[in-house]
Length: 423
Image (cartoon, rainbow, N blue to C red; front, top):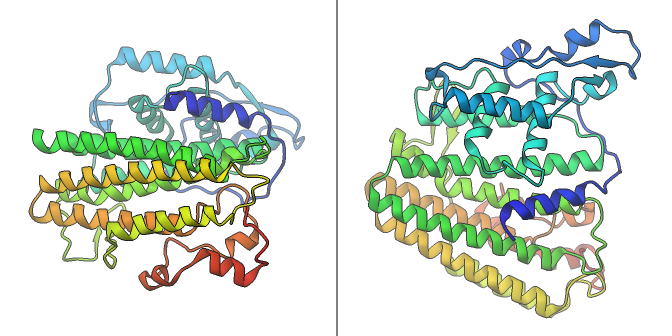
């Protein structure tokens, strides 16, 4: 099954969800959002009565982009017209209840979110059409443009636009699941953008090595998806309405780790980021350089082995989990894929020297640290998580010393009964 088919199948499950949640009111990230492409919620609500059930018209208007506005490749006008028609055909919202508008900062945000849901989570999906995604983001955020002082600024603007778009209040479990899927898929989109630009700025021998590394990364990503479903999934089909949220959660975490693996390197390759300084400041923001104590590949592999040993000890409740054999084999396949990815990163490093090599190797160390924490947490904490599990988790922002001393099982058993299982 392809990744697009997996994403479509995952979102079909979402349609069975009906519970509700509380959240804070969204707010605007960019100061200029009152000039949104679509009329602001405050403006249109003021024109109608106080009846929350009344429907308010929403009118589309597209932003014209000059060649200098484009973040990356300049697009043909014919293609843009096709995309406009596609968005309008799939998202046919022309009015909305006043009460529904309270979930969003403005109508521009609401329509953009609905556009992406319709574009990505249908059988004919445009999930990996990154040019379309970039163009639609630029329609949403007027601050996105090709006028950038550095690659750091360019990608910071993309990141800001994504964070602004996803800063809304999902009201039902179905909405929460969609929001989780959007978070995961936007993070993966961002990672693909960075890698594409890194390959574009590299000479052939290095670009070939980066493409091979990406192939191994995708194999590892698929193996992680499978092992998580085997370890945390319920063979009785009782995962609940928040199960899609859990899958998206770990895949988003994994995509964040992917960003860690390539982002620093790309800035060093293009902006000559000086690693003698702890951060780089620009008109967009501040970029923190992350350095940690060495994490050896053996540390990660040993943690895989401890995880598999824990499965053998029946730490996970056999009544609502797959068999030990299924869980152990899935985790072993993931470990093999991880080793393949790490080996491919060594090959990329062999093609580097100087600053770029230093940055790339540091990123690999940060990736190992991130993965070590994920493994030590035993893939807990995704989806709807109990406070008892949350109390036992190791945070990614923890100190290096905390990682060395952390033991999820000991912490769990010191706080709760030995007979209990965390899931």
